[in-house]
Length: 466
Image 1 (cartoon, rainbow, N blue to C red):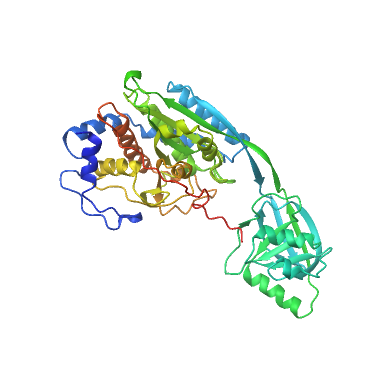
Image 2: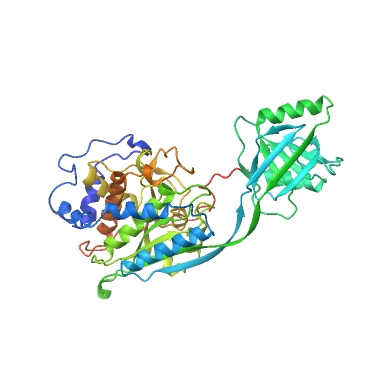
């Protein structure tokens, strides 16, 4: 019987929970700490080759500076990743792709009757400096603006009912020179105008309390003058890159025609060195590529790092959407590594686009059961590069620790927060799972991927547009 089926039989003896491991039964005696006998010896072939210092050192190199998509720093990271793949004996491909990008403003200021507020900008707002009287126009709908002349004024608008972009366009069409949108609930308002538009005027957000106070002043007949400054915002076409290295089956005569992908994203957000998000996943992809290079396999292993993930999975969508249907059908699994090393995050979990088990979760639960005495739990989740694969019906899962660390998307996401123990654990779980499927020793027909049809491309992302 195939090793995968044997391991899966053990795994299926449990009731698997979602995040945090709730509902997990106690492991079967004898499978604690990698189990016994043949499977233990087989797993050691991968465990013995993984060098966690390699992963850590690559993280340290990559996190020296933020790697924002389409910047020189990101391209330097791309060249480094390519050179690392090549040092292991791969022929690495750099795949460029274009996208319409936005550079956030470096200056966002707002003063009202001389009092300085702390506004936030909207994605895709244009730059500009505007001073004018404030005019409250409710929700900023067309009906709210009928008969109103906003020439030279700054529109004050409440959040709700229509998108931020429509609010700004409606106000601009009525003559407004700038827009202030206040929240309809407590807390700050972080939003996007959806896309660039030459008709937009500078737009910022303020809190619900600040907005209500301004509405009260205007209702009492006071003249309220505002000065709004947005500088450094820019929208334009940009170029980012994916890096791809493939390990072909060892023996052409035993090529099963299938592909397993191991992926991560190499870009980071502005201002963050991105040690955990996601130099950790990128460095792990590199190490697993090194480990697998000379292992005998009957399956193609494809190691990919994607650009522009932080801007909406742009690199992975480009890669998946530009593969011919015949090539897509060859891909049976996607192991996606994102934020896999922070000492301050929670436990390892897996996320699939529909919350259901698939080939990747089955393989990884079997390997983690043998390694740690219990299978890694899984649940539903998107917002990473497994999503484009899952949308095409490919078995895919994100490997991540939950809850996230407090340093997520901050300047504090640095190498000193990285845990070698966590890196080693994830690398072993994924490495063993991948090789469990791809090795020659796995005889007989391999499990088929589970097709999932007509999954909306945007159902896994929450973007504040209203």
